[in-house]
Amino acid sequence: MPGSNDTANVTVAGTYAITLDANANLETLALGGAVSGVQTLQASGFTLVATNAAVNLGGILGLTSSTLAGAILVNQGTIQVSGGASTINVDNFTNLATLSVEAGTLQLQGAQNVLEPSGTLSVGLDSPTDYGTFDLPGNATLTGTLEVRLNNGYVPAPGSSFVVLSCGSAIAGSFTNFNYVPPVVIWRPIYGSNALTLVAYPPISLFGTNVAINVAGTPLQQATLITATNLNVPLHNWTPVATNTFDVTRFLSFTNGVNSSNPAQFFALQPTYTIGGTISGLTPGDVVILSDNGGDDLMVTTNGSFTFATPLPYGSRYIVTSGISSEGAFCVVTNKTGTIGTSNITSVVVTCSPIHECKSGFDPATCHAMEVAGCTNVGTISSPVWDCNDIARDWLEFTGPNGTGCSLHSVYGGNCNSAGVLLLGR
Image (cartoon, rainbow, N blue to C red):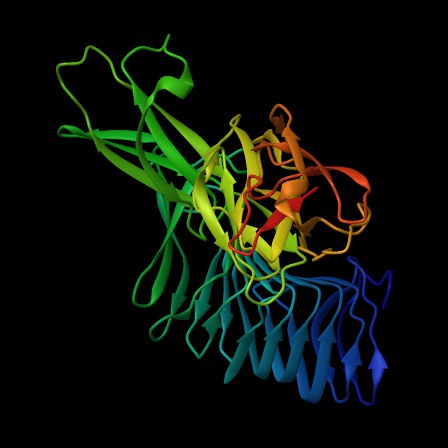
């Protein structure tokens, strides 16, 4: 009923699509068949009765003190409550998209309420006493995203708390993502036995001889708390206190003792990021030791992704090198050096190749290393050079078994093995 300003009760049977705009003013919509494609409806004191009907909502349904009742309701759009107490009381309700309560309460009363991982429960906060809440007296397992929206410029004071979700029985499950709009408050969601409470935390607080530092950030991102008594000291010379990880709610807290004899003590938080990449070309039995900045050794035995154990703070330099490897592999590192920015490094590439045996001569295009019979043919060793892995290697001049002059890069230092064979690699 686009454009209708009249109050009406509508009963429709059969399978159909319904299109209602913001001017539609319905008190009761009774459905006797399958419904899909609801586009826009703003309803106050509205009742949707879907007897033996499946309602597939793909648009926006705005409710104020309204009721949705019936057999099946699937939300793939937005159901938005802007005030009063609204109820979804269907036998089978599934939320795939957004349930939003800007003000008032939305109660899910049905026998089966399914919150899918793709769905979002959103609450609006306008003041300490005016905010949206969800009431789940029946069964519901929490998952998906909880969104918190601050409306009309409201910013809660530290210590403020809001019970945004309550359950008739114990809470099951938990949200897997949290979205704060705008991100100006350090929120800590606290799960109780039958309620979820949002608490606004202060950035810093003192109690006794301890200081608590609370931060909002990226989930699962590591950060290091550093401290100094002189602001003129460069950050890289501050003392690390502890390293911790932001939890899934985007919250991170540090507690540290304060030395009262210091005239002042300063704290800063350094985000840290991991260094890693991919390795390929390994064959069963190969072992490669990778290093970052000459340490943090990582043993790799299979192809795929790798990550060093020690994260580095923003602005740090990293250099990845391939050190010791088994006699079956020769590895080259590319994208090996850089500066830590604001994300994990995943672009390091390690390419390994098998060491070929070329006892009757060698082809520089295919042999990464070779065994040359007859160590007596080895010439003088030239001055050391740096290879692509920043490891000093010797270059050997020798005459191959077929009389061809060659210059090779020695993987094993140019030593003869017990069989009198010199192990070389380019």
